[in-house]
Amino acid sequence: MADRQDRVGEFETPTDGYTVFNTAAGVRFTFGGRLNVLTVSLGNAGNAEYRNHLSRVKEIMPEAGRSLNVSYRVVF
Image (cartoon, rainbow, N blue to C red; front, side, top):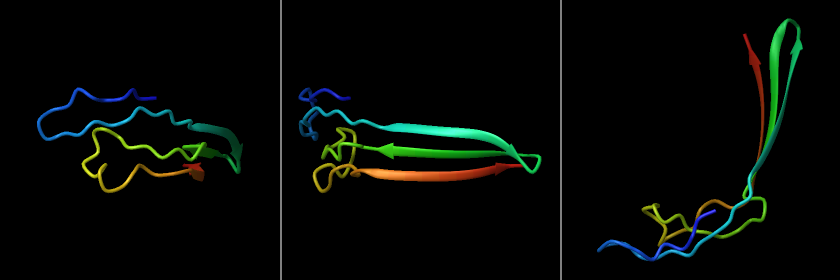
């Protein structure tokens, strides 16, 4: 969550506030004598359009929309 930013410097522009919901879940298990890690994460679940006040390109494009990431790691 970020609140509206209207206290800006000389070369900055105000930005609206926003709320973004991210979630992640994972499981660790041993298989073949090795630690295995499976992780699933969902970013910007509501697909909100928002602009980060600190972004140098906020006037050109918003932050990324909804994303789904799945990763599988084998630790050895």
